[in-house]
Amino acid sequence: MSLITTLILANFTTPERIGVTALSMLWLLPLALSVAVVYKATKVREVRAVSFIKESVVLFASIVVFMLITAVALLAIAWLVT
Amino acid sequence: MPPRSKENHFVLLLTVGLAGWLVPGGGHFILKERARAIIIFAAIVLTFAAGLYIGSIGVVNPVTGKLAYTAQIMNSPAVAIIGHFTKQGEYSVFGKPNEIGQIYTSITGLLNLLCIVNAVYLAHLKETEHARA
Image 1 (cartoon, helix red, strand yellow):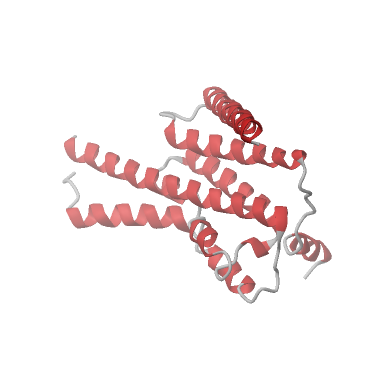
Image 2 (tube, one colour; image 1 turned 30 degrees about the vertical axis):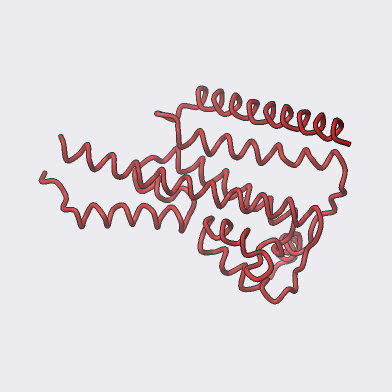
């Protein structure tokens, strides 16, 4: 097995270091993008580059905005209760 | 061209569903929806690989993470091979990397399930339209 293959495989057997910080929430962005792209790939009538990208970006933005709204609402509830 | 029999129709739907499970986007590829197939394949494989990269292959564990494994196996039967290596607990992972890795790999499994259902539905629609024409 070549050195490059070994190094690539090694990357998949040791976890990354991710702290419990507010910044770790940014990991939701690639996942939200993937959800938006796959969902739109199943929904659009015809796959055309410009309209597909536009629709995916709109869905991605909607997911992120609604998650932010939910986070703020939950924070407000937690602040009121405690 | 005579319409296909019910058995042939069922075989087509089964083939499309199985192809979509074997390789993400495979079902759409069989239906000649090449662009959709490529997008689905790239998005699901990259996100699944990102999940494994973040949390290591330890996030796929059929013993300690049964619920997540149920969703992860929808990516492809190849996930069972990873599960075979990790079930002994040699690649244990905890905390945030485990959490994020499991979420990434499970969500991609559920997304692939959506794609499989969509491909089977498209195959059914195409066959029905073909029979009517």
